[in-house]
Amino acid sequence: MDMEDEIDVRGIRKVYPGAEPSLRGTKLEVQGPVLWARNLARSVHLTSNRAPSVDALTGVDLTVRRGEVFGLIGHNGSGKTTLVKILAGLIAPTAGDGQVAGVPLRRAETIRARVSYVSTTGWMGLEWQLTAEENVRMFGVFCGLDAGSVRRRAQEALRAVELWGDRGKYPSQLSNGMRQRVILARALLLSTPVVLLDEPTVGLDPRTARSILGLIRHRLQKRGQTIVLTDHVTAELEAVADRVAVLDQGRVILCDTPAALAASLGHLTVLRIHTEEAEPPATPPPPEVRLVHCVQRPGPVPTHVWRIHAESGPRVLDAVLNWITADAGGEARVVLVAQSEPSLEDAVRFALPRRDQEDLGRAAATGVGA
Image (cartoon, rainbow, N blue to C red; front, side, top):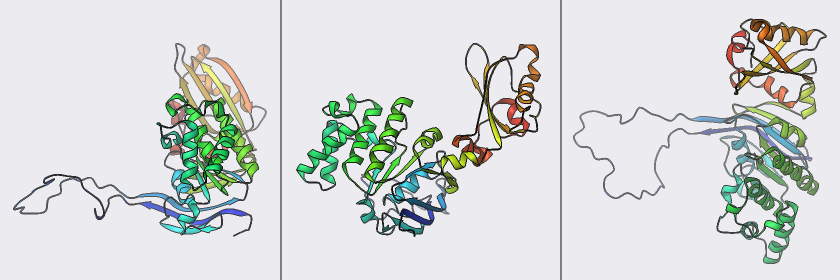
């Protein structure tokens, strides 16, 4: 392990068992018999349903440098939250080893004292009978801060997230974005070496999300804290993360800086095209096309939005436009054409298996992934 690494884990696996082998240690609050049978002549299966085990992580190697903002990208079920909870010391891996903030994974209680963890739906961890300030103060008390430190740090944290003027409001009086800010204030309360943020901008409008990410980037990182945050919106992580890792089915399939991942598709160009009165063509795309994504927007006029990745070249745009409009005759209208270089989103789209891509209409029949 490098001395500059704040997080270094190897071969992390996590398997969630499908069915509990026993009820030992549980407490059943039931009066009278739940099931009573007599004189059974043979074995009886009361249900054919058996919950299978789930391989949430299948061998993750991950290194995060001290002071780095590190992003985890992946679809729902890719293993992001499971990995973050292991790094937070909340659950134990099935296999693998490593360290977080200089503490071995097996010492989960010590890790929890050195990590601030903010869950996806952070507002669910708020006490709705308490004000925003009281929620932050309560968290400080639970973490062992003395009364003077709690008052001082709560004020500093709420000012940092621009909620000091709303400190007397209850969670029911706050918007989703303001509730998320209360949770981030709790993360600011403690100067832990590592801060883990599980989709901190989920459900927020773009303006509020940018504000939250700016807070993460400028406030937390300036304090020298190492930040790991998860998201499924690549544009948000591209703006804030030093490096990103892409998870799929419990394994890391890409890991690099956003710029490096985007540059890996430097031989491609990205075409964004909007058409009206033109159904997706039944014919295969031009040979320069590598990836097609098409969605139909609802409305009085049928509108299709295309995002096409193709080999760069002087004639590729004309070839793609001719392909899209060939089956529509003279009724097709091209209302927008934009051409750009690949981004992190494009790199992620290429990396993920085709089963996770979306396609629409006959574009799927061309054999080109959406």
